[in-house]
Length: 403
Image (tube, rainbow, N blue to C red; front, side, top):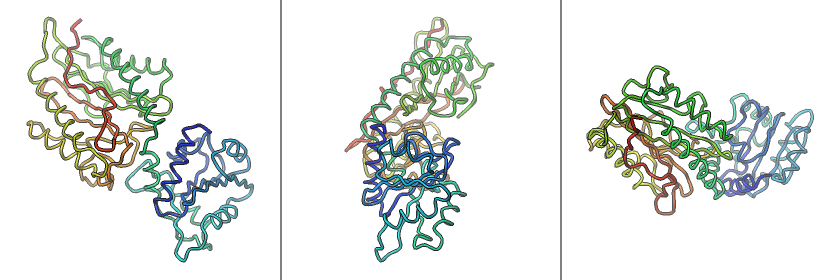
């Protein structure tokens, strides 16, 4: 068992005890086909047969797994008891729950991984949920399944020192790639060529991708570039007067970055960034500062978004159409609380309190007429009384030389 998984399993014991659940149960099968997003935090390797990984409020860790999966799990050392089965998981699972949840004069609470708001806490498929209900039918655990989103959000979101160190390493790799991309990008080079170049560098270093490889990095040049999560174009090339923008996230040692940077493409002889671009940059960085200034443990995420949104609008720019920030961890979009507006599509996530040791992006941008999209994305770590910038902030738009 890796040191990181040992840290996270210990953290899980505390989270389960605080949640009010008797047992947190992760129920999976054939995990090589996708599995539950929480698995890499509590398990080295994968599982094939129906498997129940349980952490009790008393700190017990019990796994009921297929006989061929049992030995590797025992060897990992992370689980105090590993119970193998052959024909059916039903009886050993129910027997383990009987031992883990003594009668207490109230209905038991078995927390399982489903959530209406957080995709990273929604790892239990509907079929597996129905199967688990069937196994518990006729026992005192029937009807006792509750959402484990609070536990899973905490496990993913509350970063250990090891996790923060890996995120810092991913950020360092990303900034190196930005510098190389800026040196490669010249007038006449296409968005797609920059995209291919950056991917070649990522692959050469054995790094992973913070989100879908096909859309990473996002590369934009000028006003005709595809907005949002667009595909870089072979037809659009860097040209004088363009804003050149990149959104990039890489994975190093299992942890991600997510950063945006931009440059101004200078015409031959042009020595300064035009006023309209500088004004836009001041508005964007000012709004990011306003949002970050609100961040501290205990506030709800929508308040940071509200502060940034108001600041941007006061500068004369339209509000952005997304959240100010999201958590980063094993993926660039890592679930849990967000720094987002109180829109229905975000569910409960903007109302969750920010907690110390979470890592967030702080990001927004504006379209500059005739020049393109100017977007900046930084990363912060929530501290006891505010936040720490994990990225070295970009506060000015650098010139991308004409030659």
